[in-house]
Amino acid sequence: KERLEQQVQEQSEDLSSKQASIADLEGQCAALQETVKEQEQTIAGKEADIADLESTVKQQKEDIGTKAGAIASLTSNKEQLEEQVKEQSADIAGNQVSIADLESVKAELQGQVSEQQRTIADKDIAIEQLEGLVSGQREDIASKDSAIADLSSSKEQLEQQVQEQSEDISGKQASIADLEGERQELQKTVKEQEQTIAGKEADIADLESTVKQQEEDIATKAGAIA
Image 1 (cartoon, rainbow, N blue to C red):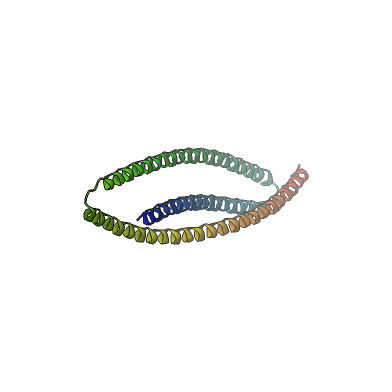
Image 2: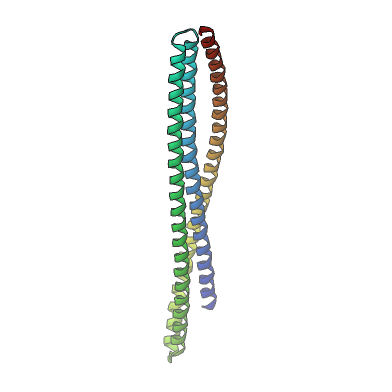
């Protein structure tokens, strides 16, 4: 019987450890999913910037062949770019507020985890006290036949508990394996998106260089007009 009780205790500790591992993996998956979401938004922003720059390049190619409308077109493009900068500044400010909110939620969740850990510790103490009471009551049993019956019943219950915990541990191990696979897949997605962002930034740099060259051409044309 003592051996079975020891086995129950060991499996309970193993189960608690695996539950903590699952919670940790779920947290990592949630963080990776948030990173994926943020990078998708970044990619969308980069693609929008590229589209705007391509439109500006096309417009400036058409404006190079004109004389009277060149200065007005450049002024309009400047105002549009200033508006875009203003909008992007507002977006950045909004993102900073969102980050602050997430930090607050993280702190709150950490507080809840600490509280739950204290609750678990209290329950462990209560279990130890109850086990002590049960042990004391068993010592008070006068009848050997009754004691044997009680011990047999306890043995069956412990064997059932061992079986149930073994099945629960198997299920937890499967959950950990699934979460680990999901975490690895999300990490792969994050890496791919980082490569995509790098490519988009290179495209933007090329387009900005083209815009700058065309602005210099327009300035030259405007000087010739003057």
